[in-house]
Length: 491
Ligand code: HEC
Ligand SMILES: [Cu+2]
Image 1 (cartoon, protein in one colour):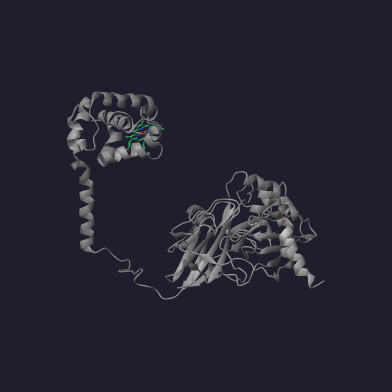
Image 2 (cartoon, protein in one colour):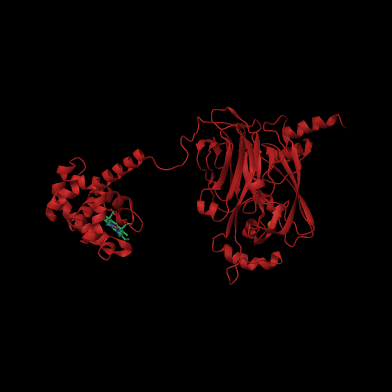
């Protein structure tokens, strides 16, 4: 019988439908068990697969617990995979099978499951892993495409709540031959860090203080109400403000290449390494697409993970932030890289430390300030138009800048006035939102001092409450004529 088995298998390969044959294949493959580790760290793994596909077995538990999310002691009733936010990062190779046992201990209150964006079918496996407190389930799926992918809890009727309460993480499916640049050169990393960004929605009491809830169920109604505002109270990396700073800062050395996996299961984000770059960035996280080179900031869509590869060139403390800087500095979305090594003067050098301003420098600054203040008065356009009667304004201008000016035909002037009266008058006759009023010399004087080119630029591109092109659909010539008309009333 034992001798016959390979033959039988071969027959199955030849004659049976792919699905069944493949399932049989997975059963024959070598099984390896991998222990997950808490982020920002990632379990040991090969970058290039040295064997054929395997079944990689993982066990992950779910823990509901109250956690502190900032330095002020604000609490949240969290739901977590393996007790961490984000949950652990899984690493396999394309073509491997993931075999996950999901455990929901009886100490929990909620049903949970897991939707792997790297999996195919049954809501990413969520349908097959619905576990009540006191239950476990095992799912196997084929990692049939490479990339970094989000996974998250998705229990019916409570999906967003479980996700923003902490239940997401990442799976990295590496190409079997490892990472490559667009030319096919191999890319390696010395370290990989897993950063999970979370938007948190903590309810406040009548006094504006964050509320503390005794149980997960107690927190539900108020939390959902805050969630519906779409305005997070906190935006954090790895579960709390400061989870990746101070003694928990990410570490690297000059010359080391770090892969940063950044996920956000619910909301868009834009990671940025202050003072560094992304040498190679898979912004959408999918290794089958060529990485982008030398990015300053990368965009990670809500519900996805991105991967950035960077070789540190300079020592120091680098802030790693969500470059919505309000979210970084006011709401918490910031971490640190502490990089050891030797400073490279060629890349950057402080030529002179801050100190009193030198006399000759001060004089030069004063001189250029004077020149700048005089400059507008020297431009021909406003001066010329001041002398010209209103109707001739357009005609006077071609002399100043012939190539730039439009035909001075009276019809153009009329078209400008007509456009003003239809599209611009609403704001510019009343002065809504400080729109300079028609004929109001005081309002226009500082703008004229900036020069007509600047005025045109604002008219075309907008500024503050001034919509681009005054929100009109007029052609360039007519829009210009409308501005000329407006200027003619203050000269
Ligand atoms: C919704 C209101 C609104 C409409 C409509 C509007 N503007 Fe304005 N406009 C403004 C405001 C407000 C400013 C002042 C912007 C500022 O300085 O912040 C302004 C400024 C300007 C300026 C001065 C730019 C400068 O140098 O500061 C020009 C020129 C101008 N508008 C032209 C137009 C023209 C032409 C139209 C119609 C095609 C138009 N605007 C329609 C609100 C409006
Ligand atoms: Cu859940």
